[in-house]
Length: 378
Ligand code: G6P
Image 1 (cartoon, helix red, strand yellow):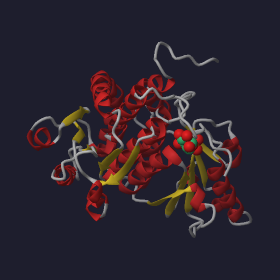
Image 2 (tube, helix red, strand yellow):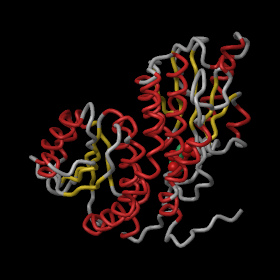
Image 3 (tube, protein in one colour):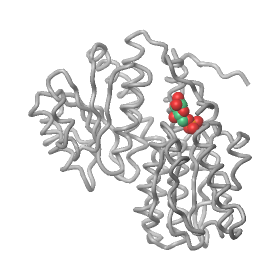
């Protein structure tokens, strides 16, 4: 079917606004409504894919690689499985040693990215002739189950973003995050690494996410549009976060680079002092993701160090008083949610910031120069 912009100026903006619906569709597809004996999650994967898992290796590119980093956080912190994330273009020439109990996951929205397919093909060949369990432990996460990836691997989790037209991924990223929440929670339930109560609490939290995105979308639209006006000529941006929001800092920087052509770097906030802090002055704004939880105070103190170098500070945070109100020059508010679930919310204002800056600069948001929606060559 023809996909239309439905009154939005660009597909990217429309796709950003579709994210609450994508989260709803994922909740409906991946989570069982009632009580279930083994796990409240149903990804349609065979039980033996989960048994005796020792480690997970994930290969991906671009925005899918960022989703994989959040996946790693969830798989390690919830399910207790050691997980590594690789750029597919690196892994294909230097694969990690694996065992029969290593699950490899390829994440690709399009299912056609050449490097990701090549890394998985290499892995499939490496497993040929080994025990059946070994050969079966290949899983794809894709928005296109009918793609080349779908033919390559024995197991697929379909993400439910619908067709994405904008070259810069937005709703497919959110859909990938939902797949990782479901997978990590499913593994955690089966391995009993989290209690039933906690599991239920996390799932209930996820169910609130669509309306929490909706609650802040309009405010974020207005605020990011205003900021875009001020930052249209800015040459460098730094995005910082920690823990589960570090990959969101990377994603915020990538969105800005891709569509506005502004140089941007995402950094784990605690690592700024080891180099990037030398870049800071009044001309370099810093966007800090500060979510109450395990690293909130740390991010605030890292932000303070940036402020001391005259950087303008933009806070992506649910906090609007105390230290946050004092140090941030601008706030991009998000709803209060558990830190573990916050990336689905914190990414949205960063997508909008990139969008409005690019639109303000009069750029071709949906078709940025030099980039392709799926890169089918090495
Ligand atoms: C291209 C796109 C990105 C995307 C990356 C990986 O570079 O422009 O938006 O994240 O490919 O694509 P995939 O289809 O493998 O997720």
